Length: 349
Image (cartoon, rainbow, N blue to C red; front, side, top):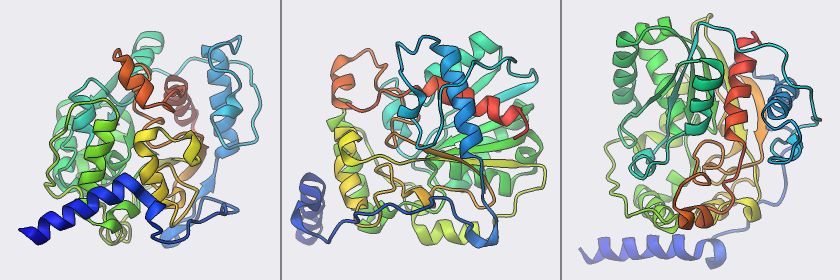
């Protein structure tokens, strides 16, 4: 018992003081190119084209650029202001969103992935959207069964958008279930834990304590976190074993968007995680190293200038102002991002 307690105290100190203990030198250089070709599956670069769609969409939502400013503030891409899109989103598509690990901690406090973006698609474009709440600490195989059961009851032509572990759950669902392959035409990973998370290398106890602290620091209530297999499933050896089997059907189109942000533009509750990951890379979003967040064979949509939460989770729109202030770098045009993803995919790119 004393040994276990001492270990947990050490874990708490690790996440309290981070790299100030001098665990090792941090990486100080950027990679010349983020996207790679893992497991022999070529990744194509669509970042410039997607950047144009995103800029046009942001202009469409904020014509005078008074609310959001320039689109270059939100993407690492050589893009400029674009005219608003001429065409509406084609009919017949639906959007399915699956959140990430520990998402129950956020959903219990009314923080839902892409909430405003989903509402906008429904109201402005009549595009049906679905937020499927899966077991955020359950293994991907179990969540894959939940996804399959949902699609069996709600068939259609879907763009599936997975944030963090949600992208992994969707990949496993596509791999394991024919009904998922029959209904999902495109898979989009947003800061997906595709090759696992290096934070897990510090141990499961470290991960749980770290996320409990991040949730508390965000102004949310204490969140009960007990691994049901989902945390272990994010180990890099587990995820890479799955990726060696990943051979999507030819009709499935896959896309990956990553996050790259420096520590000073990372929300305070995530900064210690950013510091820990800087032992490996500064091309990261505080939870995922960029080149490990790309689906093999996908089209690379680029790198967003936002941390792991900013790309999908609307803390900034939360009615509790304490939460808004504590998650201090969460202001990001997620509505424009989600609409741009849907526009890009439905254009056939």
